[in-house]
Length: 491
Image (cartoon, rainbow, N blue to C red; front, side):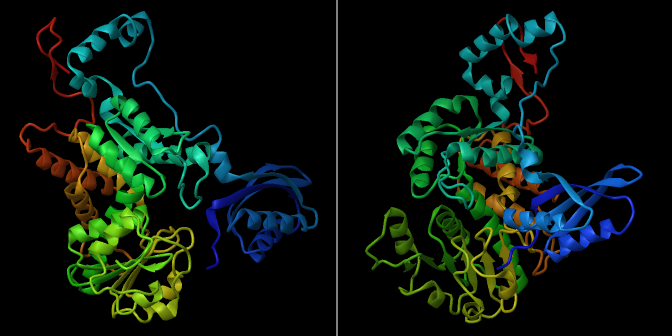
C-alpha cells in the first residue's frame, strides 16, 4: 500500500527566488509533481530583486522528502537554503520538562518549600506513609517504564532510542488527563532486574505504565509487579489496545446488527496485544475465537506452544481448526489484526461472512489495504490517522490512569477495563454512529473524562468503599491531616 504524504514526514525548505516572474507557482508545481503536498508557503523576507520563501511540504518518507528538495533545485533562479525536518525540530531538547507549582520568591518561600519547613512534612509522612499521596507528587504521578525491546514497529532498539516515545507518552498523559508522567528507560532486558528496579522506584508513584516491552517477558514482568506492588500496573501495549478494540467492536456490532456472543472472531497475532485483546473480548462475551500467528492457526496439536500459546490453544478454536490464517477467515464475522503487513488480500476478505468487520491494526502498513477491505467489509478500522476509525491507545490510557489515581486504586482488573471500554464506546452517540465513525477522535473533549469516571467507579466498587472514596482529587489536596502538634488542619 502506497504511503500518502504525512505531516510526520514534513520538511520546511528555505528558498531564495526572483522577486518577479512565476517562481512561486513553479515551486508548487515541482512539489506536487513529485508526489508531495504543499502545506505552507511563507514569504519571510523581501527585497527589490529577491524573495526569501519558506515552503512547508508533506512527504511520504525521508527519501521522498529528499527527492522533492532535489526537484526544487532544478527550478531556474531558485537557490536552496536551509532544509529543516519539522519532526526533528519538535524533538530538539526533548518534549517535556519539570516545573515548580509554587513560586520561590523570597526566604520565607524557600523555608517552607525546602529546609527547614519541609522536615515537618517529611516526619508527618514517616509517621503516616499514606500521607505521601496527599503531600507529594506521588498522588498524580505515573512511571512510564520500558526496556526498549519492542518500540512501536521498530523492534528492539534499546532504552536511549526508546526515550522519544516515552517522552511523547508522558506529554499525552499531561495533555489529556493532567497526569505527571516520568519516562524511565531501563538499560536492562532481564526480567528479574526490571521487576527489582520498578519495585525500588514505586514509592514515588501512584501507578506504573509498562510500555514497549517484548512478549513473552512482558506477561511475567506485569504479573510479578502486580503481585508485589500496592499501586496499579498497566501494560498499555496489552490492555490499552484491548480496551480500545473492545470499544470499537462494541459500536461496530451495533452498526451491523450482530451480538457479541454469536460472532466468530479471527485474530492475526498472538503476542502481547493479541493475547490481551483476546482475553478482554472473551470477558466481554466472545465465545467463538480463532487465533493465528506466523505458523498458522493456534491449536492444541501444535508442537511449539509456549505458556501463552498453550493458553490460547486451550481456550479458543473450539472447532479444532488447523491451517492458515487465510483459511481461517472464511465465514468469520470479525477479523482483528495485530501482526504484520499484507497478510490478507481482497479475495480472502470476500470469503468472510456478510457484513464483516475488519480491524487491520498493524502500523504503519496494515494486514490488508483498507481501501481493498472496504470493498467487501461493512466496517473497517486501522491504526492509522489517515483513514476513518483509528484504533489509538491514547483514547484509553490517560482516562484509565486518571480514574485509577482519583480512586487511589491499588490495582487494575478486568472489570475496570471492561468499564473503560463501555465508557469509551458511549462517547459515540447513536445519532453519530455509522460505519466510518465507530470510535471517537483522540481530541474528542469528553473521552478522557468519561473513561476516568467509569474506571474510578469500578475501582471504588472493587474496593467496596463507595461512601468513603475520595471525590476526584485533581484540583489540589483534599481531606485532613493531623500533624500531631496542632488540631486537624483542612488541606
